[in-house]
Length: 224
Image (tube, rainbow, N blue to C red; front, side):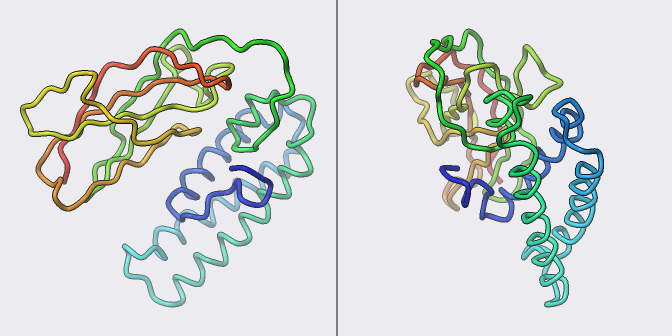
């Protein structure tokens, strides 16, 4: 999410996750930020239009050409609306903190000279979805489980994984960093040769200075 042109994900599944979080944060916090109620309703209506059209028009649903076109048209209108709301009401809104903007997916420069704290606790992870060659991991802050925001000063969440036999319990040194997420969802993909094995995960906060906190307890799931 390095600039204003590409901070909205291109990948369809990633966009679906992004819009879900964006709309939820806007509904929850938008009134306090001074976003007009009508604009919040516009985003919620766009989400309501997108969700069934995405479900019907994605490749896995074997869509007709009309369903695929309806999905694409809905996304195009939705993206235009999100950009408009961000540019008019969020990007330069003094009521938002930089942490708020990061939570929304809006990249902001680091203009503060104050030292951000080293994360003092680990995030919590759960396997949200198991599909063929895919795990979707939901990550929350155990200190504030009701919010999707990361703790103050946290820039990203590092996700570590170990793939092994069903009964193997990995050591910490066995895990490999497979990616970092700025959101509360992370998708872990696999190769065909991994089917039948078990994937173990631990996660960790990293602040804006690249300093890392403690790692979480491990969770695991079979690879389908």
